[in-house]
Length: 428
Image: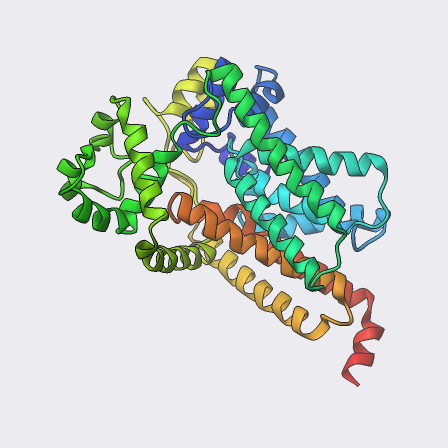
């Protein structure tokens, strides 16, 4: 919670207002699940917006401690927890994401609990249950987590088939089943609360925005508008990469029509199922994924005052804390993260180099930790590839998870210190 204390109030993002409103009003947002909003409502006790951040901190601390328990005995893992968390707080976006009224931190929590579930040998039934519950919770909070984890599970199954990693298939199948359960849970909840059995009501709009940004939609419309009467055809010269967020976007006019969703879905289907677009889609996807992987700056959105969604919800739901909110460092535009981001980039790149060298040198002699490093980098790569191509490359998508790399680096260093005899033997 250090970043929240430093800010003087929990940090908000424009979407924070949507989450608060969805939870308190039982309204399913058009483009995201309702579950994180419900989490905010219940953990806040309808009394303080600080309480969800405190709850996130407790979940995160327990998840980090459980992860450390893979490598160290119970007493030692709790001794290491404070220094490890302190280093992550001072050198990465770890605390900033945890201090946000946003579900982003739960992507990191998801990875920690997946690794603990797959690799922790001495476990109790309580530990197992908590790992599974937290995995499902993280999946419910953000749909990108479901897609990332499902793809991750498939890759793990293939890796066990070729004996690249040593994990019981039963655990991997349970992980994939958790994804399927989350999909059904989200769809049924959306139907019960919002009357529509679907994962997202506006997923088609995000995909169209992505196709505008990567230039594929322009090529498609140029060819098809002579044969088909799409509503987008008359606007094709004015399609902006800011299609969703621009207040003056043509989307504001198009979304009034019930036929827009059907039309957008038809365009998306035609593009992705047409082999002639596969080369450019593949190339753009790789480029976007690579950009996203190395764009992990810690960012805080500018002031959210006046008519912004967070201000409106804080004013409505937590009016007693409005003065604190208005006078926070974020809303006074006093937060400067340039130095922090410079330190973070150095720490991340050094840690990444360290863990990659560890895999090369110790793959055969330290297989378990080497496999944990490999699957963590795989998860980071999937996160970058999927988020960048479902939406657009944004620093917060990778920043929410990249702190895993320094955590792995610290474990490697500590393990080396406790196993110095082994390294002396290796270098002889």
